[in-house]
Image (tube, rainbow over all chains, first blue to last red; front, side, top):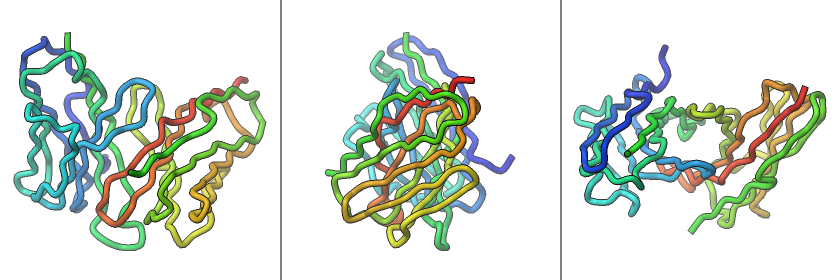
Length: 116
Length: 112
């Protein structure tokens, strides 16, 4: 499978715990995005990497959220001191380096986070 | 700030019917528009990508049009099937590398 891969698919955690999600983009895609989606809404942008550089962060990304893409390949999204309001689907997407379709986004299956 | 609206919010049709989903955006300065399908509890599957210089794109029974000046796009689904039941999302990008801005989606149910 050469698509975008996200792990874990589901995560249930107690309020106050830290969680970390992983995203493996399509090989050689240099752009990687994180989005958050709550029930009945479209995905909302969280942060964007071009290679290993984090170029944009949404105001939705509070100090409790941190994302990394250390070698320009996979990325991690960590949430510290989780709150019930963090419960959502976290989606990762990647886009190719160049060509006419170089903004086409390909999404993973998401990580469903439930904070209890 | 770009805002994307999708109408209707939900749609239920009998199998075989042709249907149109609507997407509008407030800032016409976009680079492209992308239509996605999302099954319950799953990620997004890209259906069609329309560059700002294009008027439409077709894939199988799907046809998407773009009128950038009026800030509108439509997704036309021909001869709908129960397997088309899903949420359909549209999203716009302002420039290369920029984030997608999504609408809330249209929930489609095709009854057999």
